[in-house]
Length: 150
Image (cartoon, rainbow, N blue to C red):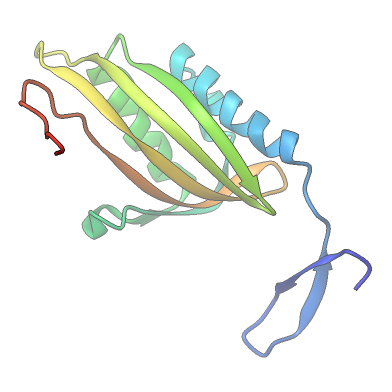
């Protein structure tokens, strides 16, 4: 109706209009995440997550959690264990209230081992905060022979 998007409010199928978000505003959230990660600014980072943020890693279902308090605990550990942590935002795409972002995370753990992760995060955004996410981020394999194609 009139170019408005609709969202399901309850399973009883009551609908209400939801304004279409500004894609640049959602992309700016990805930029703010990168800036906070690179500054190791845990308060700025956590402020981008809704209190009831719902996190899932489909390849690692046991890592699921709910709540921005757990975001703070997880990322405080990352910043402490990887003092030179760096986040590179490779790209973003927006579809309605969904932000897709591609990342490369690198650094050196306190024990001297390397951190090198790459992947995509798909997240929902409402009122300038992440409300849910599915993370597809994995360790980058190095030193292999790779594959050949005929």
